[in-house]
Amino acid sequence: MVLAREKNTLAHAVWPATAQTTPGGDILVGGVRLTDLAERYGTPVHPWTNAT
Image (cartoon, rainbow, N blue to C red; front, top):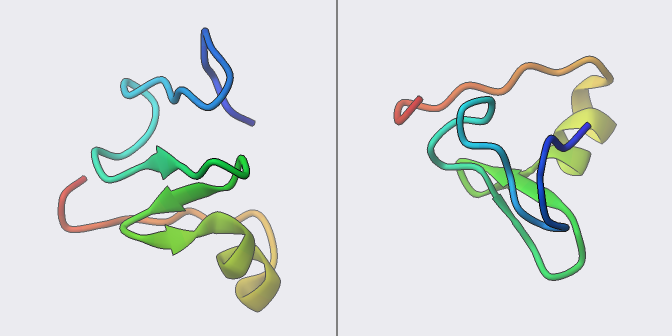
């Protein structure tokens, strides 16, 4: 779930500092697509980065 006021804008109080969206609507954390993590490890997945 993306908590945002505008499409493709993340609520940075909720997401890690490295989180961003792609033009296609995917969410990246630390440069890794969350869909890739979900496919590999299943869900729920709780990504962490050193920048968090």
